[in-house]
Length: 388
Length: 76
Image (tube, rainbow over all chains, first blue to last red; front, side, top):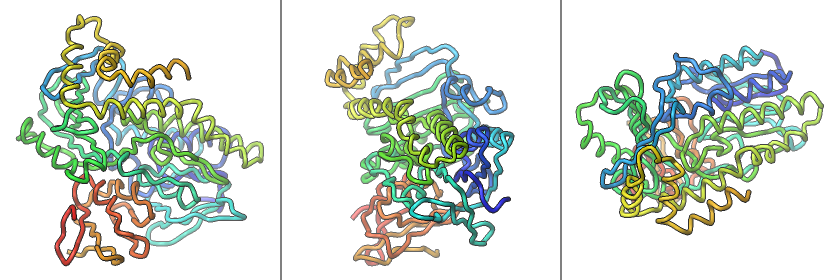
């Protein structure tokens, strides 16, 4: 380990690894600090992602693909299933291997990686972030850098230490629980989404198949719902009713910041990526692909700033992210607020009308159109898709 | 059990570390930066906690509770 780096990346999830890789590929000296013992573990994720989202950053590899997905099944509160075919469009990942492999791509590009390094403060010089304070094997240490990239996840605190407003409104935090259970009798090529007051009010309940009859089963509810009833009690209820004897291989909790991106994701000497920047797709709650995109932009811009010896250059990151995905997320958020407030009755009606469309003509677009008929005010937001 | 707890204000907030999954929801919603989360260690920074309860509402597995007069509950 050197005394000083061009770039320190805090957190070795997908966003951190990609940021580290792009910065290193751009010629910067990079070190990535991970607080946990392992990269990739524990997994706090439903693990579903589109093929496109992965392929931009790493060649698909069966070792970290747990299932190939070609269908969505949306289940309304009365049990009506609306199935949409996509072709071979998505994966359920094995994140503990996936994250590990992504970190290796950063390492191959020249980034150093240290695990069990818990960052607990920032260093400042002339009002600019100039490094991190961290605890490593019980010892408090300091490490200097020209740029710090915070990829420290939903529990990120780095941004606020640098003066950015980063905490998530509790109403926008999707509080999630998930079990990975075995002997689950669902189709191995279908992602199942359940909606309704009884399963996941203001969010959705998911069953994502994994290899050999296992599946990720979980849900997220907003902190607003959590005020009255926890995500865990919804999950317990669902498991008792549907899979009472299923062997549970993993049980996890997690938070998805399902809001739009933070107003500011860079400041002198610091950039935020992934969940830390709230770069999650607010409609789906998916954050792997968007986090990697955020990481790639940040890593590239950080390397450019080092190369040009102009640290102010990193402030261009905000705009670059907004152009690429940020503004689309703003629209998704509006649609989310429309859809997730639907009553059970409305969900049922949408599913019934959708199923009247001939099977081969059922697409996500058609489903969406059906939803719009039931919620005309959403049209205004959708119209913006074409205007922006 | 050895709880670490907030001591400010009238109410107290407890995190039950034995049951905690260290997922970070509470840290993400805390407006005061009053929760410290390491790999498998969590505690409330007493001086910063204002007992706003957002961590309690956001905990997916009910391990953060109010503790008033020795009675631990989710809501007040």
